[in-house]
Image (cartoon, rainbow, N blue to C red; front, side, top):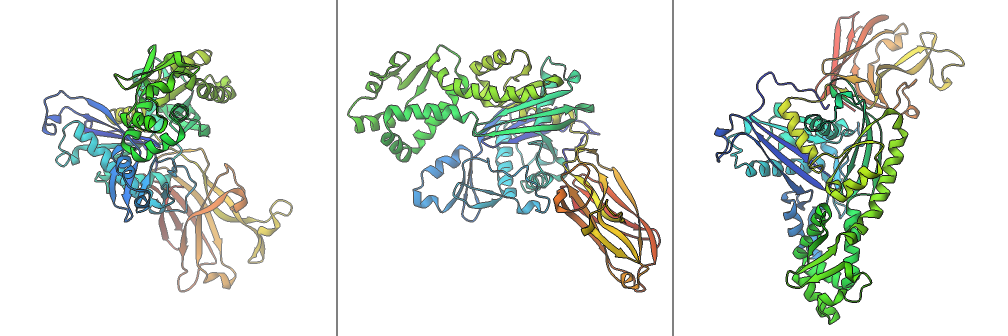
Length: 572
């Protein structure tokens, strides 16, 4: 399955729902077109409704039946005892989603993700539940009756650009299971969605840009990748680096560590265990403060339950915890409003070490491609903070940098825009080379001796890679790749043997042989049984590989007998 082109021959769909199911946060957005009056309960004009954000957390029972998604999932789960928690399946995030695994041997139904206790669940099930919840959330926001609107809905789902085709097929099937119509589902890449929105909303003339570096700073990692922009804004990935553990959560951990030091580890653990709802609210408030601070001071609401626990354990009032601190002039507690008040300079001290490390690694990557004069586009909740934006622009003043407005929602907004424009990626950039194993006349000193075979009194080199498609090549629906072949069966023992044609993939651009050492694996095969009289002594034919929307069609033509054989093979 590809991120494929879609141009509407009719008017733009009246309802477009865009989904971004992220590692730590998922988002949905809805667009209602001019005919929206029959769908909507209110009297607003045609418009795009605000993006809805939901934590990527999911709770299932042990029968893998859906219970909750988002904040509700963590609230329910935290209310269970440690023993009862073992009876459930809980995902604190979708960090382990296997979107880019080389899994051509795995069918979409067998892709799995592991929860925090080690239980494995079908990825297709997880996405089915998530898509259902996000679509319902989007429609609820707009007061739209979804059941009466289903046939009018175009569902656009954003995925990482390096997602394997098995993963894409898995998500596509999940969307169908969630109630979307098959011909009204579009998969787009995160990067293409970002580029689309930037082309529409910024002053940077992306048509004059040949290379763009996308930087996504999520809660738990930072991903950097460089793309070449081709015709029709087509993206071709050239390199990528992923820094796991270096993300926005690093700042949260610093603030939490500070809080633990203030109240004591015993108080903190008791608070986390006995007051789970207040604990999650405090974590949410820390995230909000981290993203939004830009004034001279910032305020963090301290739950009353934490204050009481501190007083019980220490014998001191909560406000007394800060009196003897060396930085007490930078932080104080307001008992009247139950707020901890930080000076701006003190909060910035939590950010600087993390931001400096990120920027150093980003600059190291960028300078490798500085000669290409790339534009750097940075997204993620971490860079919604004005202080971080100032650091980035100041530290990278010699590089063209763009931090889109609402950088944490740019993917879902761009996906919505792609739906409205009827725009998608024109073709699929192949991640592997595709070829057929063939036999060629053996040449001593050229071909490996272990591949030498004798047929009909002649020496042949087996398993030579006859390339049909090269890795990195752009293919489009309807493209046909052919290979002229011939087969001999002069030896009577060969006349009655089945013939097998295999489609092989390789990680190399130009593999010589269909062997494991050259990154090769069999993707699909056609087996043909001989006629009752046996194969002709010599027959000629053609192998044909046809690109479809969701798979290849592999065909073998026997021009001598007039027979045709075919099968469908999923993309690698």
